[in-house]
Length: 159
Image (cartoon, rainbow, N blue to C red; front, side):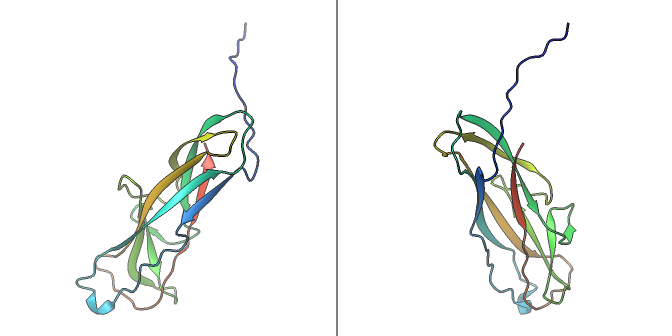
């Protein structure tokens, strides 16, 4: 005889949660090419919050995954850094990386566990994770002057 154990199936509606990145823009200031021999990395912290928007009829827990999508940016260092470019599209000699709360470098375009969220009747479920963005000169690379910016998408999904 075929026996099947019971299982639960949960439907999670669209708009049931939201992702907040704070601050939404990180400005690391100016890097002066005259000081390229003594230039050090600059870092800034930011948080990613996965938050429940609407209550559930029956409370439950579910694991979440987080992914930093680079949207076609040039990756290096086994996908753990982005090669930055100036407004002319030239590599400017800097790279960007992101570290998690443990100090581990995030691998871009790869889902990793964010944690377990408790979804409840009062829409109080929340996970907050702290990250650090780091811009540093690439050893041996030519530093090119000019403005630069980079944008990524942070995606949080149910596992």
